[in-house]
Amino acid sequence: MFPKISKQRYALLIAIAAALFVGYWVYEYAVSRNAIPEGLLQANGRIEGDAVTVASKVAGKIAGIEVREGDAVQAGQLLVRLDDAQLRARVDQAAAAVETLESQLASAKVGLDLLRKEVPLAVDSAKAGVGRAQAALGKAEASERQARLDADRLRDLTAKGFASGQLNERAQLALDAAASESRSASETLVQSRKQLAQAELGGDRTRARKAEFLALQAQLRQARAALAEAESILADLTIRAPAAGVVVARAREPGEVVVAGAPLLDLVDLDQLYLKVYVAEAQIGKLRRGLPARIYTDAFPDRPFEATVRTISSRAEFTPKEVQTPDERVKLVYAVKLYLNANPGHRLTPGLPADAVIRWKEGVPWAKPRW
Image 1: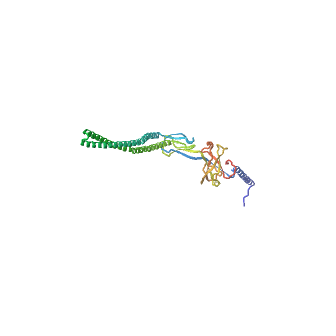
Image 2: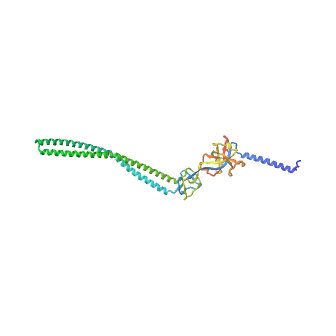
Image 3: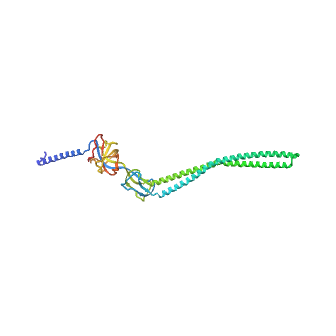
């Protein structure tokens, strides 16, 4: 047997049930009004960017840092200066070595060019001298032969009494003179041939001088390479922004000594920003890469920014504390990156909270996020 319920208590139970029924339908109506249209999916998160770590290629002491966290920088802008006193001295030394070798090479080239002109002329002149000596020797030998014939005839004539002894002596003197000239012409020919051989050695001197010239050229190339290396290292002491962005971290301060590769600053490219959102496990199957999205911020509530789904995580994770989901009972979510198609005026910056609407069904009209 059930206990009897008084009329007052029964009326109270009826009123409570009616209130619950009305409250349920009011909640459903409110939810239906706030629900985003089918084909759209909303999410929220913070705007982030692919960070670029600015580091030094060489070790050195920081002479100055020109930017601070939060500063916007342009591509090529000066960020950090390392002390360059030693490197500048090295560059000056290398430049002086190059200048010296260039002067030596220029002088060697003049000498080589001159030798190339002198050697053929000297050879031709020596050959001409040999020719003249040979001709003179031939003439002297002919004169000697004639003088010998004359002397022999006069000796015979003198012996027979047909010529005086004085003529015989003159003939003998003429023979002696012709023989002397012949010997002198022969010696001259020998000297001329030696001069020709000496002149022909000019080819060897030319080749030796050319080898010296080529060695100087090699030394100059090496010196120029050393200068280029020193100038390159000197240029590396001036660190510039690789791209436009915002300084999000400053790891070092002036006066510190850093090793090669040590991080100095972190930049975020303002033209490569994305909104990292988290999508519930039950909704992730609706998304694919390439879907369009719109990003809304409190700073620009009526100015949505176009974006595209680029990355969908392959692993689920627990919902981060700062992330809001339509169903607070959702525990596992997937990270999705929505890359901005453009960031006009660089209005959006890393760290800015934002809402996103992703259209996963074509033709569905866009709508603002509804939380």
